[in-house]
Length: 318
Ligand code: NAP
Image (cartoon, rainbow, N blue to C red; front, top):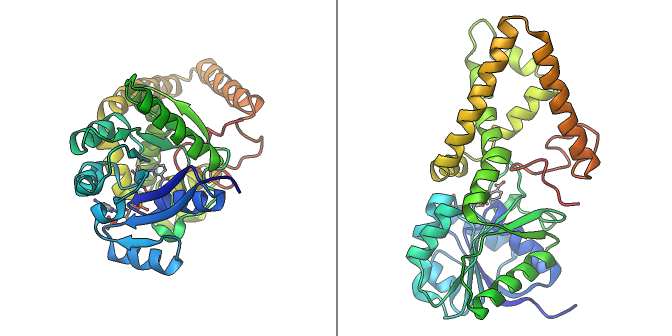
């Protein structure tokens, strides 16, 4: 096996994503030592029992001591607090990254909390499931998935080297890395991931509240489409509350556009404009066929089954 990409990795917040990063890095031989800090006593007990970290602690500063790479894998709105707790233990020249689903707000929170002697390279693996906690982690989560890094505009060669090394790390874990501006990331993900989750949360709630239809009937007759929405709507409430509050502008922008389009569909149904409905459904069918033709998805309807991606089911690299 080749040399590890980093001597010591510290993961702050070790739930589904943090545990998967560690398991994948261990499997790939991409790290030497691993230290974990997690605020949850129950999670710490499970991580200790699972035995995939050399050190498990509640103290982020203790976990990051001597680390070459620190990854924050806590909910988006906890990033600032976690970074402040870790800051006193960081060595100069350490690479700092995260896995948060929103990038501009997290980049700001990390920069405000951390010393200028570290290299901050925010990141987001476009991979996940609706599960939470360390037991849900698995080594293959990032295989053939995109990881988006949103580096700062910093021409320092040492910073550029830090970005390259982090790219090597994720590549070793089986992912394909793309560099992107953080605000652009937030707009793209608002369309491909955040809005679909909002729709799922809303439609499942609305179906459960519908007068004249019992919950039993909703469960019993939930055909493929509705069942897939319920899977997405089972995603972690803390994580998704934080995503919507931290990516407010982009989500409201795409939601406004979506609401207008939905109104147009509603009008077409009310006035019996079959041609409009047919044209729209034909256009979206072509988009779906284009995704399959581009090798981004198999032709079988597997939304959420073998894709495992709670975040963006249709974003698998070729
Ligand atoms: P998770 O399974 O809920 O794990 C998060 C862990 O971090 C929990 O054990 C939590 O403890 C702990 N924690 C919270 N605040 C902390 C703090 N200040 N210091 C130390 N530990 C803290 O969450 P996850 O699903 O892995 O998500 C983690 C991050 O990955 C989020 O930013 C999310 O946006 C991003 N992400 C998620 C997915 C997905 O599909 N789940 C995909 C891509 C990216 P408590 O339970 O006590 O709060």
